[in-house]
Image (cartoon, rainbow, N blue to C red; front, side, top):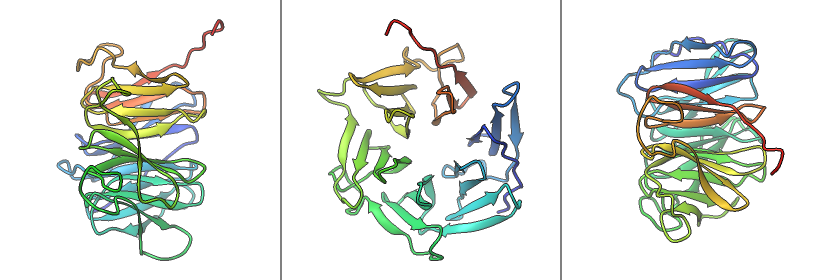
Length: 265
């Protein structure tokens, strides 16, 4: 497999289009134009993922059980991790550790500075299942500044939170008495600048946010697939720009939702 050279500009959002087998870029600097950045992903590959790191390059999880980095400064592509299974989600934390959610129902991490290709397990120590130390097809990942890990536990239809060094996760969102929004295959998670959790609910299809009062629906609240404004079709990822605006990639394209503030609140 060959990865094409990508150009990633400052203040840009990179979206992987799984269906078309390509990467795209939303440039936020002038006219918010969308540009395809072609890459030779296999169209039937369900696992490639990207992560934009410090506006210097992109990490891409490939179907060949590798994670590669493209450097904006040099244009070089280098293998950063060799995994026992394809990565369904990847993330790079502020200490330069690369995380991979594997199809073996585990999450592993590896230092990008130590020069070793030996990932260590950080979640899913007990493998496939639904207990606090198990996962079932984990997907999207997010690591906060305390190095605590959030995992979109796809087929368990929950979001798990793992404190640094702990094998047992805490369920922060799952269908039940305290969470009544009804998750349907959560595929990605992200924290906003205030530390609030946002969940991409793949079959919802919607974006669920949180605040001081708990969880609430942000986008796609009709729960109907469609192309109308505020409707989504199987969303796959949600990202924020530096202004707090939300970009959502789904199977019909990319939508941008502008942050608005209520002066009376």
